[in-house]
Image (cartoon, rainbow over all chains, first blue to last red; front, side):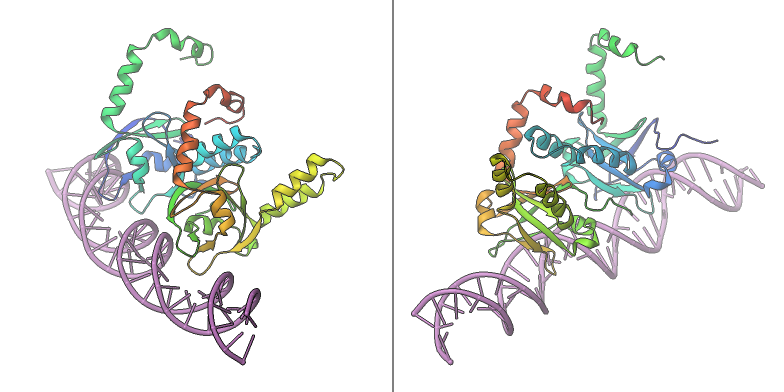
Amino acid sequence: MTINQDTFTGEFSYTIDTKGRVNIPAKFRQSLAPENDQTFVITRGMDPCIWVYPLTAWQIIEDDLKDLSAISGINRSFIRNTVRYASTVTFDKQGRIILSSNLLKHAKLKKNAFIIGMVNKIEIWEPSELAKVDKQNLEMDSSKYDALADRIIL
Amino acid sequence: MTINQDTFTGEFSYTIDTKGRVNIPAKFRQSLAPENDQTFVITRGMDPCIWVYPLTAWQIIEDDLKDLSAISGINRSFIRNTVRYASTVTFDKQGRIILSSNLLKHAKLKKNAFIIGMVNKIEIWEPSELAKVDKQNLEMDSSKYDALADRIIL
DNA sequence: ATATATTGTGGGTAATTGTGGGTAAACAAT
DNA sequence: ATTGTTTACCCACAATTACCCACAATATAT
């Protein structure tokens, strides 16, 4: 069976070792397209989590940023905040990537991590933080989803 | 691992020694295309920081400046201020470049420096100055990014 | 059920990287 | 020329990182 390339779904639980390494689920490694050369780009998520992009997906973002003129101050701060925390990681022989202390701190990660497929990217969460955000979303007025109902048909 | 040439992302912390030398992150050195002959062009940034361009990228800027008519006074002063503080630097065996006291002063750099990849160029910041700009951005109305949101999809 | 392969977790070692300083050549001023 | 100053180039070492191997846990096949 052929799985969509560079597409990720499902939730997995892993441990982060003392060197800051986490395993990337074998399933995700296999669905990563070969032209990525086994590399992801990891960065701060807009939620308290880590975002993981396939290299080629991230390069499209970079190419778009290259077209923004640095004469505009808004452009400069946007570029800076978008790429500042981003770094390239290749997974080792065992299928792990290394997370910098900077990113670990941002996501409040300690010993355990949930890895969640988000279709075009992957998220790494501290379990308790994920529960918090879930709770907030449940309490949220569901009418906020209405705008999306026009675009996504389940 | 194939990384985009002349493309820089991530944030790194380094110290400036008594001779005004700073390390260029190994990652950046490696992504600098060979035709640059290990040389950058450093100049004043439009923010209080130092801008570092790969040589070939800077040459494209110079070519664009050549196309601006000197009949316009605005053009003349723009050209003058763009090129005025620019100088060529090659990194030494240890991967460092030397910053002139002129540039150090402009960026208010003292002992520590943050080096930030800005996709097509590199910025060198005094940590406290960067924090200031960050604070301003947080206070800024996020709607200012709206025009960009149409062009850049994260 | 047993054997076999794959996946997840921990650690050790060697190479690379970052930081300090030293020495000799180039330059400037007397 | 002589002296002082700056610049370029070289070496040393500590800290970090990349790379390798071992093994347990899980899954797959026979």
